[in-house]
Image 1 (cartoon, rainbow, N blue to C red):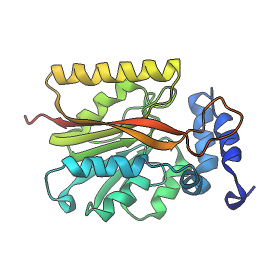
Image 2 (spheres, rainbow, N blue to C red):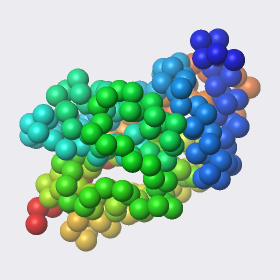
Image 3 (cartoon, rainbow, N blue to C red):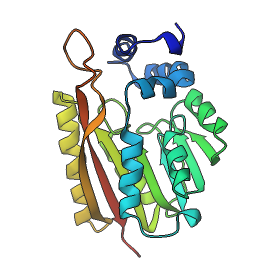
Image 4 (cartoon, one colour):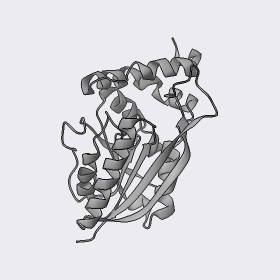
Length: 234
């Protein structure tokens, strides 16, 4: 089936096929999805990249054209494409899917792209270098473990920003992930690793493709949460 003939119900079936997959199966899923990923997310009204980029920019101080950006779980390059419109120019991307990195490479925006499955492999980024670290959409149960936020902080330069966005999928595992993530963020603040800049709830993260009803409801959206921290100066 071509991407142009796909429906929301088709996409729901596609996403359902990935539920419960292990990390290697999920990588293969995203490799095969890469070519139609952006078209399909447009159909799902996936707003998280726009929300996260503008959330960062509202709280950012500095000259975007001088900033080094680490785009974690970069996918096909949606976040970098939006950041370029605001003047950011220097990007390093990391993702666990080779197919997604191939799509990101086509944008021509990244100085370098690196393959790594976060949680099982270390974040392949030089510590203390990046003025902005972005991760949008991957902080969820079964994808990127919440403990990876320490690696994001390590990669940030002193005074650098770490911007994180996650969906609020209502499930026992999803709720527990949120509790564990926010406890880790708070602990890192208490340890003096970074300071909290802002947290913002969003009510239109994307169309809820995961509800238990028989059909996708176009007016029913997942909510999300965005977090922004700033690494302490040495």
